[in-house]
Length: 337
Ligand SMILES: [Zn+2]
Image (cartoon, helix red, strand yellow):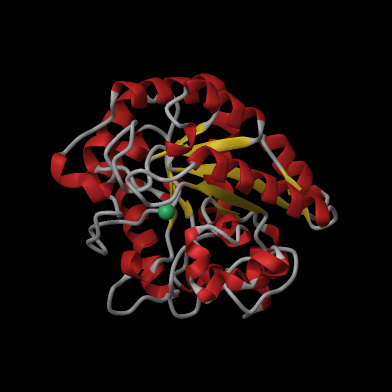
């Protein structure tokens, strides 16, 4: 990699709006029955691991400045003890962060992100993937806010009390009354609403309901790779018109079923930039939640490969900074303050 690319990558603020690393920290979480994750619950995220995709040394190497860590509900129509599992993930998150105070800083505001970056630390923010973890209570949202959560996805692909997910798309169901109430409360509290995993009807309900711009924390363009988890051009236009940003997901099935690679991932960015300009696209890797990775993006330490490909495609320095994190940061500043 040439000097110019490396310097640009190091200087840019890099934001990744989705990973499933917290799942790896809980030994009893379903996912951990898979041997790929097994040992990581013992080592935590502070030491370099050969397994999975994210730990602090690899985030540092990849130049990531803000990593959003998802508290994830189990993909089950009636998950067992979602609130308890969420609490355990939050506890694991803060315990791990406290072990490495020189490396990582939990953050809940734009200022804290910038300060943490100035101190040379990785900023770490909590999000929710699947609001099953509210167990039907709006008051729980206020508790999560107090615990530092600043981004909330309503569903994790299956129908819940708030909305139908993409996996329940045949019903064409949108947001329930409770789902609408949750969005209004998210707006009031200053938490970002995340549309990833929502069914299409729910997306349109949400765009109409949310006063704040919304994110798609880890979704790509359906016109480039037809998958229901990706967004149609109409959805991307509506998201952009409302000031939203979408984070590019590295899951091979969402990138390119035949040739998942850095190049085919950047094809999504090209498409979105052509469609709505450079101000609505960012990164949302889904690392530690995907079974395999695109060629050239084997884990988070490989993030510079994205900058390299953007430079190769003659994106300006300004656009590259926006795509790597500037867009996500602008949205966070506006919504969470
Ligand atoms: Zn997801």
